[in-house]
Amino acid sequence: MSWPLRPLRALRNLTRFKAPEHLRRRVRPISPEAADELKAQLIQRHSESCGPLPDDEDLANHLHRRLADNRNQVVPWLDDAHSLDGAAVLEIGCGTGSATVALAEQGALVTAIDIDAPSLAIAERRCKLHQVEAEFSLANAAELPEDLSARRFNFIIFFASLEHMTHDERMAAMRHTWQMLPSGGLWCVVETPNRLWYYDHHTAHLDFFMWLSDELAADYVRFSPREDVRRQLAEAENRRLALCRAGRGVSFHEFDLTLGPANQLDVVSSMPLFYRRRDPALRLVWRWSRDYRFEKFLAALCPQLHGGFLQPTLYLIIRKP
Figure 1 (cartoon, rainbow, N blue to C red):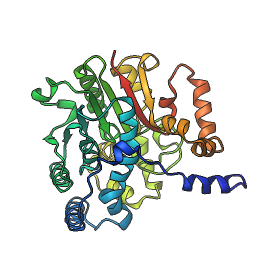
Figure 2: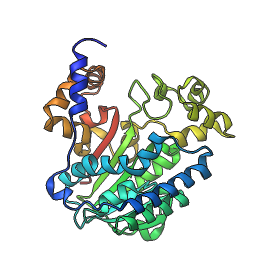
Figure 3: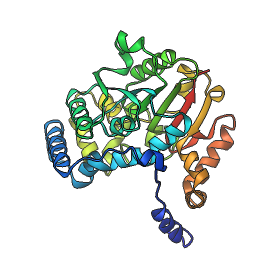
Figure 4: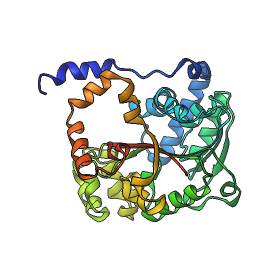
């Protein structure tokens, strides 16, 4: 590591996001007993779907870290674009409900969908333990039920879900939800890896992995340092489908094909840019990084695109005209 990066890395570790006071006041904690109940359900769910017990880091992510990240980073960013209090929100890919709680405790009227029934059950129980209300539906975003399609939402949010869809599912889900959104509504993508990025930090943890075709990537994943990903792909009957479910990148090309030309979309905000503008330390760290140099390279190649499409991970709020 070069000398200048040592103090900058230390500075980054000291940088902490903190939600504004009016959002912190609405946080709904749970009791230690409720947390233990939720932990037991998460361990059972993991053992039924994945076999071995989750490691401590994975369990902590599902139990409280993702909730904390959503409360302190994602929710303030969304609320800055449009108040969540009283807003109708369609959350696509709710998983075990970390984001659902973070949205609902701010007064959002959340309708949460997921394709996995056991995860949906945990999400519903998590909300009850936090004493917040949300509506849950077992559904695929590519084929939303008519009753959901006919409703109008202020936010439609894809929470870490676009990257786990097949190409056809993604195209259908993006196109249909954009059509559902009323004028002035906000279409959002949260925590989806950018296919343009040189390093796959999501699935394989390999350089240039997201640039590979699905067929080549399914073979090349054997070099991944992640044993669970290698095993998952090796045991799959359809390795290409398993790779999609594990997570592939998304880029501005899908937006061009479904929402309209990406360079003409009304991008209200990108979360990485949002926080860099507000945090000089974070901005300084970014400017000393290799990722900053790669972002500048992409910007030189695609000067017409909003900077949000050039980040390692896509966090975008787009307003429908």
